[in-house]
Picture: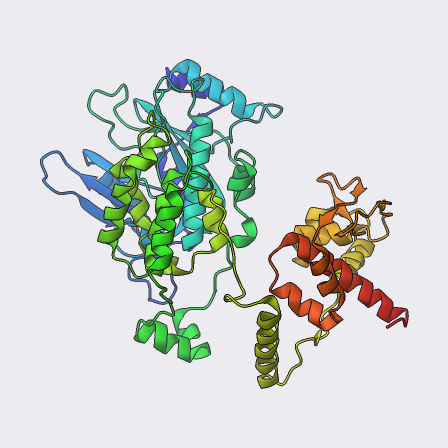
Length: 532
């Protein structure tokens, strides 16, 4: 039996209510109590239950002070009830009302004793380290549910919802395979998917009467841990887990009266809409043979279509019609794994005005389609820079500042070196956390005195920069050749230090940026030596 396998691997059967106390941190004030004053911006888990003799089911807001009462008196007596590890604003578990994720839950069907043994072997084996080790395993009769409880709840901002969904899809594909399941068709579920309530009744005819749950791992997880088990391009940057305000609504009203009037009283949102051309362009981009939709990214291409539809003010119905029209093309990418209308309905869950500002780089990451930038507004570079400098000067003049004022901020090199002097045995990751600097910045200035091996040959019309580019191990320094037309090099060489710094703010080409950066360093060094 599956329960015997769980016990063999050290699982401990626990009371389901204790699990929910662990997940939602009951008693610690994370979720809202009944009749709690408004303005605390707290949300609640939502349960749904239905009895066999009823035509319609019921939603229940799981208030912190009523959680156990509702659980025992209503959910445990229902013929069918579900809930997930997310809190919501309102009374239903809809994606646009999701607030925070307290636990990520996976469903794997077709699990046998051997399959569960294989899973635990790979999850517990530190050398193998192939599957993330769950905090709890629930046995629902015909499959298992894996619970990963977060150390701190993850805020479900629009861009993070999509990234978490992709993270969950990737982890599902990793954990659901021929070694763990007899079911060959992997069923990927979104983060909003509910699961049978722990301790509730199982399906009729299931081996178990009620859902059993076992504690496997007492240590909560975080995003960094789950990132270890997915490809690099799917990893979630923990720095994007925005810090939320600790202000109550009344405090925010006093501190930001204009925001309160526009946002709370009048419901105004500062969203821009653009011409429909962008939406139509994306449909054509999906269909392209080169740099178009690909198998494994079909779902997210449709999700991006929804986002572009929002940006262009297209109705949900029209987007759905256009998406359905793309099904034959998307199925042509892999007819053995058909793309369905159900997939499209799932993608349409992100039809929310807040996705209007969804970042371009995240769309590229999700869809695997490279999107060409153009920041010059169809102008020549010289004219664009002239206009950009004028706008910059006007904005700073209004504030009584100069754009090149450093405002007393210490150089990044000095911050890193000061930290190293105070922490001689410290690690780079600790320096990142303490200083708030990015990983590339810490790596760049970690050992400022490291000798650089310079290339002796400089091809005509090209430039070999003398800056350090480190490998992952940070054990070596190498030279990198940047290939540029001679005309571009000459143009950059003619720029002053101030012009270069502005130029770099608007430049996207990595090669041009690389040379401009070296040029800035050369000019600064010349200035220090009195040569300029």
